Image 1 (cartoon, one colour):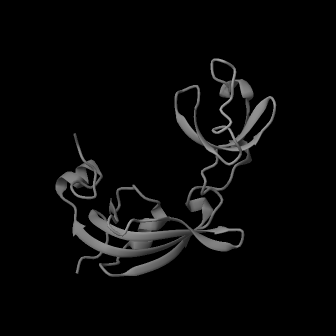
Image 2: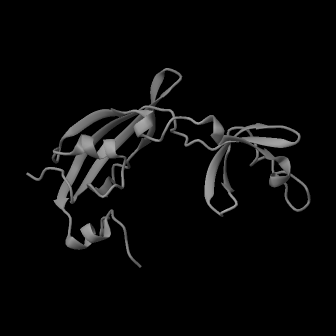
Length: 172
């Protein structure tokens, strides 16, 4: 029986639930046909996620919570930004109201060309209020994880820090 520890390739099925208005709702889950495959100890996943799986083996199911601080961070009011309406106009000065509407997630870019996802909170005549907090920020993460497979990583996988082959990363 292989136990999960550093340099093992682990396949898991998971479900993530978060609190929405007082009840836990599913925010994310793995596809039954395609488990999440990761290299344990390579730092691909949240550290608390990996630590809760350490020592487990195939067939084990584990449920655990990860605090917002150790998950996607707490909500930061400074991530809520007012952007001039001009930024959203096309060359003719029109705004795509299908895109720019409350609740939509828009891809934005900063001065350095880094991409962000922001949620539109409010649209006024002269600006758009966007929230750049991660959608899971401020939420306690409730995971249920079932271990589907555990194998030793190959030397290549260990040196590259990720999984190769089915369910893994492919080099081109």
